[in-house]
Image: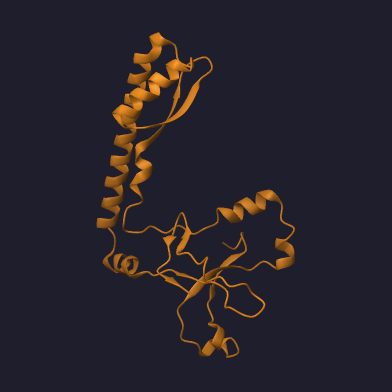
Length: 189
C-alpha cells in the first residue's frame, strides 16, 4: 500500500474536526490516498489502472453471486477459431449450435462435435466451481473462531458529502452498492 500511496486513515466525524484527534475514541478507518492532489491530476494511464485495482481483498463468509456460474467461455478449434460464451442450460446449448450452423460459422457436419465439445467444457466448469466451493467451505471451517466472529460482525459504511448550500442535493442518488468486491454497504451516511 505504501508503493501505491494508500493508507488506512482515521475517520473524523464532521462535528469533531476541530478537536484534537488524540482525544477521539473512534475505531473507524477509511482507505485514503496519501498522495497530493496536484500529483493525482497528472498521473499516466498505467498508474491510474493500478489505483483502480488497488482495492483490499475482503472475503465475506457468504458465497459470491451464483448468477456467474452458468456462463462458460469456450474457444472451438475452427479456421478461424470460434470464441463464445455459452450458458450451460441444455436447451440454450442446442439453440446456440443451431444458430451457428444457420449463420454459417459452423459447418453442418461439425455440429455434433461442437455440442460434445461444449458439454465437455460445461462439465469441466462445473467441477471447477464445485472444487472452489468446497475449498471455500473448508477455509471457513478451518478459520480461527475470533477471526470468523470478526468477519460476521464487520460493517461497511458509505459516506456521501454533507449537504451545504454550494453542493447539489444527493438524497435521490444515494446507493448502497460500493463495488464488485464489497457489494453493498450496511449504512449510508
